[in-house]
Length: 487
Ligand SMILES: *Cc1c(COP(=O)(O)O)cnc(C)c1O
Image (cartoon, rainbow, N blue to C red):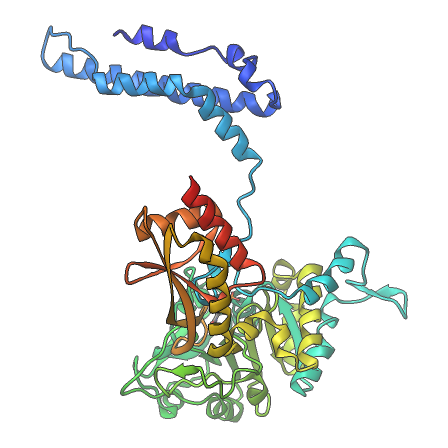
């Protein structure tokens, strides 16, 4: 087979463009796809023949045949070209940001969008985004106002504080803004045990560098004492930072200094004390009989407790345990917040009306003490007994599929996840599934790829943890298993 023959087997762009197979397509979108696929094939053919040429020039005067397997592959690709192009065309109209069923038992998953919002909160958002709103407008005065006023009063009421609140894009942005405003070209004291990576590559030392601060590490990885901070203080020092160990835990021979003691020290010598809290836990998870710490030394501090003796500045995420929109919520003394507002960087970190609308609606829910209306908290609070009865109901739904699968209720542990409560396990129940016709890895993969259902594999079974299932998810899982077995 000569190269020329293969090249000739390639259809022309216009032939494909006018092919009956593509009668229903938008030609403007189709043409670049055709060009791209033909170009790729041409290149592959070229490569086969370039290979022979280099071989032949090494062994003079021979003329080798092209790799017949490679040629067959190209012929196959040409044969399937219309279908390949049609698939690529269909993919153009298939969104990649789609809902999934989270049967993993991990309540907060950054990869799955962290906190889920309740219908109630979502309903309140709708009129704010489908109509004009008072984002930066004062109705009484008829003048411009600030977008930062909206959540402020609600936050103040919730935490019973006169601190001011400022909302930015996420907590990473809050850390950056605070460091850059108060500690640029200066030193920031932080314990060696808190130089953490939060996930997604967010590392405290890197953010410090970005903000132009110099890191002054104190203490040892496992133990830091107040005297370590005292001894390290110098004139170039602008801030003492404490970062909450949100996604890991230390057990054994370890010690850290309480924020309150750091605040006292900072205020004595006139530097800023800042607590990066991470998860932002308000209330609702105290004394749950089904939630167990694997170690006792890292009880999650609640924002309500922290506000009884607050540091000068603190920040937390809006979409971790707070259970609302992606945001970084900064609270601090009035004059410090004023300084943050003057930083030009704030403009690049500002939140939109969607975020503020969601936060406002969530705050209203918090003010009614209705923790179960915050899905993140609700899911963590559900008792194992309730989950067991839900698992039994689910089993009834699944019964018609028993000739194709084995189902069994098992005890599992759910996790909070998303960089929160790293050493807490929540007793839960799951349905363990094994298919008679395929393996557990195949079942896990097909549920995920074909039906957007995320499960876990435990002891060679695919497990759906009941704790993270939302209304209607049982039916979705049933339909998926049914259609998989029928394929
Ligand atoms: C999660 C976390 C962050 C980052 O917050 P995002 O809202 O994800 O940007 C920063 N610091 C701590 C301690 C965290 O736990």
